[in-house]
Length: 479
Image (tube, rainbow, N blue to C red; front, side, top):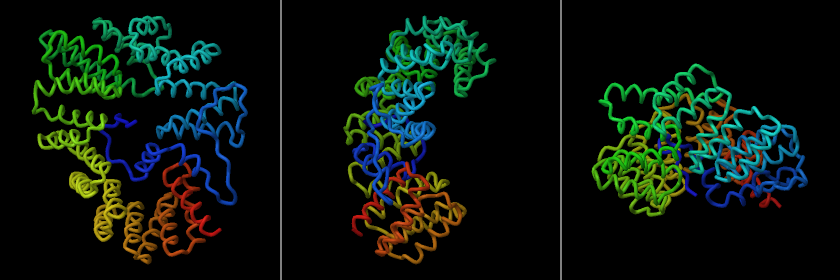
């Protein structure tokens, strides 16, 4: 399933792009095959399926701490099945520990398996009845299930006056029109500390809406409700945003911006047909608004209507959508998905004209020129531009080395890759490209050495996985 939670993020690195490719195109096969390379001997791997049986045999090759570290890594990368497996094993290794159980509850919450999430939370609360994180997550399950009455009752029944509890109580005050009560709770919550630093930032957003309402609304409640629809989306409370947006639309059916907010909430919940309906309503009310066109493009992309996605994204750019770079990013990705590499690379170069302040912005077009368009000279020219713009970045010289490999200029490739390593010995990419350089020259023993080093530096990244693949492929050649 495509992910739509990062509309306003910058250009991702090629490494992350390969991680995404592995995830979309049969992650299970690649991870089971490659994550443990055959260095001296083939190592066994654990299944990515979660261990549900309490009496299951536990894999003890890694310690509890190592399992937790791997689980957090996979969770951070969005590989939820792999993370579930690691936290499940960790919970078996140290049954008295509650952190892996909470992580399991959290992941089940993310994937919408609320019954399993609730069971894990109840395990924690049986032993730690005052565990506020578990309590709050239980309350959020009610929200996810659109059971707002029980969610409100649950949060108001929690006695601890913590920042996050007051915060959620205030959200339900807003939802049910108790604005003064909400305002007072935000003030009280702001005085308390929290391990979740986002909550204080979120409170500022809601308090700013109260201030804006008092200054500009002339007392119109629908204006305040609209501000809070926006706040609910900004704070990722999409279910609450949908409920409140519907209430506003009942009062004012031609409220274009609220239709957009409604569609945005549905889009983030991956309810694409509902999102399409909402954005279509907004479009009919104002067909020239670039934000509507942009979100229609994203929605059609998720519905696999790529032609419509391209059309709406292109017109959104023409009509001045900002940030323009994000619409261009999505266009470039769609062109690549359609294997229209010429249009894709041209779009990436448009992105570079807007923002070349990050070396990461050069990676995708260089990759396309090298691997898909067979234009190594153009790739090298672009890498040289990157070296002028970013002469103090080790990744620059890795990019140059990669481009020189594509041009079969192995001497200059080696010079630049060595320079990259000298500048940052912890960077796995130049070791990987050194492996490719020596592999192309059939110096397999040297290639093995560099692939192994790249893997050791970051075994669980895309570079680590590809290094393991290359390492194993060479072993097959040498047999």
